[in-house]
Length: 247
Image 1 (cartoon, rainbow, N blue to C red):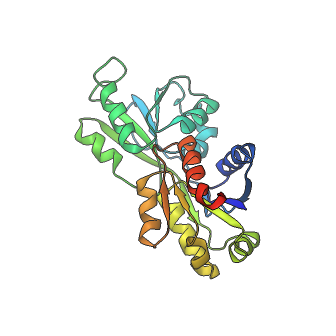
Image 2 (cartoon, rainbow, N blue to C red; image 1 turned 90 degrees about the vertical axis):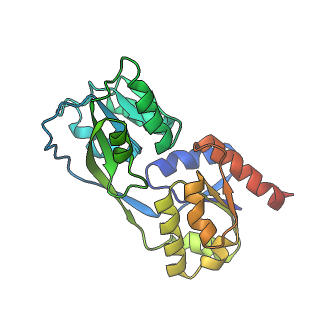
């Protein structure tokens, strides 16, 4: 039995390697495709820090970071994975939040009480084209000036790989892993287009957060939610979801 990973490339490769190390057979079906958007800074304000909710936002502008003078700024990353990508891109001062946008907002707000940030600081928010919440507005309400720069978009992939469709038809897939609300929605749409929705939703759907899970729960799926929004917790949820099936 295989585990289906819907996470976009290149992060899906690291997830697949981690799952294989745990003894799982893995199928990959990235249901969103990463497309960078050219960085055009029209703001004349000096930035005090950068906030990032996705590693893709950093990847999209990585070739420009040094020329733009951004690597010298502190960067607030939503979680460990995004922080690792930021360090690889050349950031030295990386502050890590608890894995979701709410914890990132709180981390930035608390930092203003110390010496790292001033309440009136201008923050550069490197963001995707579609946002699950108005993080800039929330930080604005806390007194910060937030400049949101869209650096990438994630485009839905309308078709699932042939081996995935065959896996659903043959009941050869044990569970599906979901990492974002958008990818969960794209997975549902692709499964519908391929005519495998019933078999695809008949198996456990393991989700990184309750926000992700809501999309699949509304579709009638059997949903399992990670205790915390990180991959290790998601893997633990996967094992819990598989336990009855492997008994």
